[in-house]
Image (cartoon, rainbow, N blue to C red; front, side):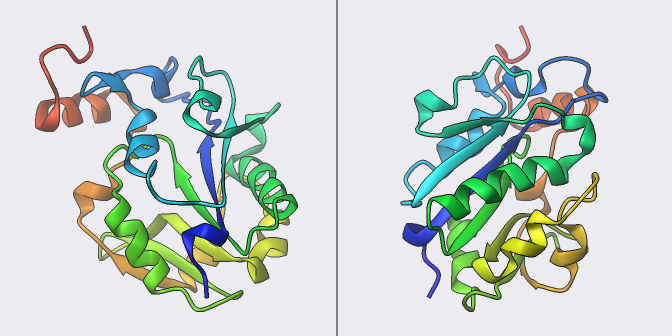
Length: 197
């Protein structure tokens, strides 16, 4: 049985943010850095370990309880960051990894627990879905670790995710911030007057 207690949280925070131009993860949203929203949302979920794969951000994930792994070359794509995180999860003896993205600020612990409810052992692949498209956060049992470690490019685990179980939630929960326009739209929906000042 997969539980948070035997699962490593792998937070991917190593993108180049080319479409954003700047340190996207440090940008203020609701008066805290964008990346700290998912960190805060999941801070009381009792994961075995927490791993942040980073590149070029000034944020201190170690202070928030994460083992920090530098991705020296994010130009090799998201799969490379994922490999770094899965390798550390394996070393820690994790039975599964929950892969989350640092630029998805609306993810909730309740949704993550629903993903664990849908898990079915070592071969688990459980992804999130807005009802149309599966994606992260995604949960993988240790039987999938070798597949994850062999991924390449920017597709990440997209092909694996397609064949897994999909837990549907609100599209608003799965919004990710790729551009400054995306962030501005989020600020208009949920933000504070001090955001972006």
